[in-house]
Length: 359
Image (tube, rainbow, N blue to C red; front, side):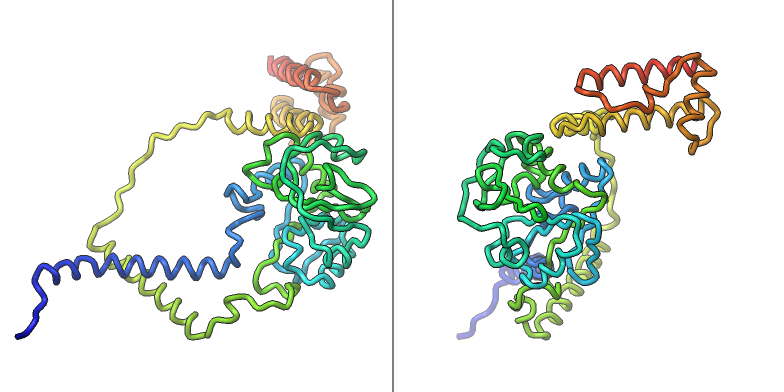
């Protein structure tokens, strides 16, 4: 007696064959991408918009004139005159990290271990774990005093100067943060997190954001998972990727061209301005906000005054005086406002000046 495959089973197999191949290809591609990224998933990456990424920090620093340079390898790393922030110091060989930090103007380490501290900042000692919660400064460090309460924890340290119950420590040249909460997109707007982050990382015009990744010559001498895989496995993964692309092209021809459809998404024009204003207010950065208002007013006044874009302040003030009869030097180029109320008055006066010039 012989067995045969029923027509129904054959049809089911033919129908399920293509989806199974697609699923396998997608899973294989996901594994390859995960391995190539070293498993970080964008955590503390200044280009990542995920909850544990740091894109918001990078953009806020950029708005204050700080150039953020993301580096995933120590090779060719130039930190002269810059702040060096090491997001994953536990991955780097302590001796290599000591060499990197020598030329930096200042160094910030995130949750370093004791062997790293012994090499880079021997005056700081790791004490143990510390619960993450809202903490008061409890110190005289200007950055902490200006920021006030922040969400911080992770690791407790002892040093000449400690803040937030030991979650922030410094020996003058090296600053240590016990946890990453103030640096993440999800927690930046809590308490004084933004203010503390801006002051700790924005002390110089350049910030080198060092996020070690596989292939970095400064990594500790432990083999990565990708180094343990045979070459044939990598070649096979590439073959699967090529097959997935060919399959997608084949299915696309059968399904026809993609039809685009506009989506009715409306975003308020003032949303970006309001968000930046809230960040400036939380960070206590009235001086930066005033500078931005003044620069924008001058840029709008120059065409109305018939002046070039690179006109000197004296020429701008003279042209306004000739047009309106008032001295606008202090308004456009004076000291920053003392508080939020003064900032609001400055904005109103700048608006009034623009209206006078255009009349």
